[in-house]
Image (cartoon, rainbow, N blue to C red; front, side, top):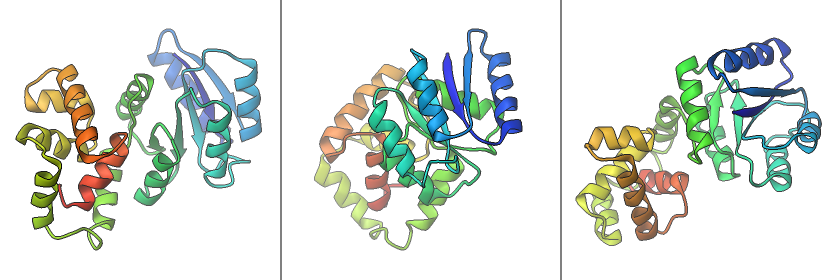
Length: 216
C-alpha cells in the first residue's frame, strides 16, 4: 500500500504514518503539510493508491482544494480526514467525489477497515456519521408510507430492499453479505441492479435517496 497523508499537525501525521507502517508490512507512506506539498508529492511519486487530505489543511479552502486535487489526479482515491464528525460535512465531501470521510477519532481497526474499502474502490463513512446524517434528515424525510411507494415505483425485490437498508447502515459489501448469508460478489450484483432501478450512479447517491424516502 502506498499512501499519502496530508496533514499539517506533524505529531498526528507522524503517529498515523508509523501506525500504517507497523500494520501494513508493504506500506510506503508519504507525508505533506499543505495542499501544494501534497500535489508536489503526487507529481514526484507514482502508484499512490490512497490520499488522505485533512479538511483544514493549508490551501484547502474548504472543499475547493478537494475539487482541485481530484481534477488533477482523478484516478487516485482521495478521502477527507477531519477533526469533525459532522454528517453535513461528510455528505458534502462525498458529493464532491471524496473516496471517504474519516473522522480523526476513528479507532485503529476502523481506520484500517476504511483504508481497505477505499483501496478496492468502495467509499467509507463511519456508522456514527451515517446516524448523524439520518437524524438531521428526519425533518425533510417523506412520510414512512412513501417508502412503500419508493420500493414499488422502483420495482425493488425483497432482497434488494434488504441490501439497500443495510447500505444505509454504512456497512461494507462483505458485512452486508455476512448479514444476509450470501457472498460478497452477490451483493455487488444486487447493488448494480439497485442503482439502475432507482436511477443512481453510486453508493452515496443510493443511500441519500433511500434515506429521503424513509427507507431506514
